[in-house]
Length: 199
Image (cartoon, rainbow, N blue to C red; front, side):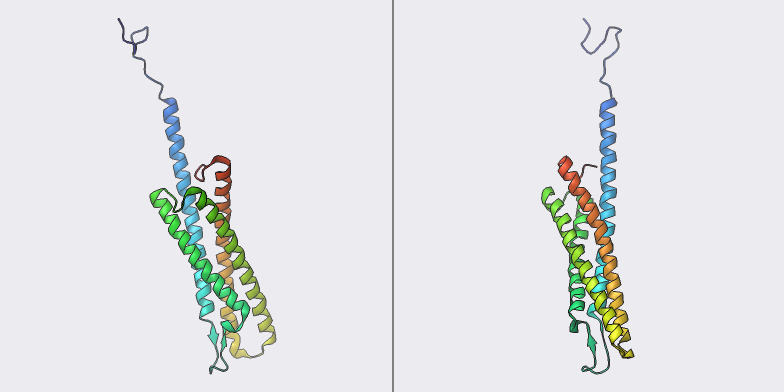
């Protein structure tokens, strides 16, 4: 009597390797896409951190003039205070997100539960991006107004440093905006597929 593993011609019946190999291939491709996606987010978040930190440093160090009574400082102006504080907040947030991205790439898991992480990233990206944009817009308007009204050439360095700080803030906003687009894409994936990792 033939064993049930043999067919009529005496050959062994083996399961077809096709579906299993295809599933492993798709799984490997999906893991590679997710890894590339995570590395891209990490790059954008690191760039946002660098530019917003530089913006905050330039503004916090922005004071020029001779004696203390003649010295022009950033905290004398509401808009420049807004620029400095917004850039510092975005730098701290971006540093946290850089750490979260490194954790996710190295461990393959999110810092918070997945549903919390998806909405945390997206909502905070939106809030901080618009906060930084509004601060830099206010700083731009104030710097232009002060430059037009002030005829003292001794304050030129103050205005130049203010412009640099605001420009760095806009660059930080740009990279935070790119991060926001990618985190928005993850929200859509989570809503449609129940997972932020489904690509």
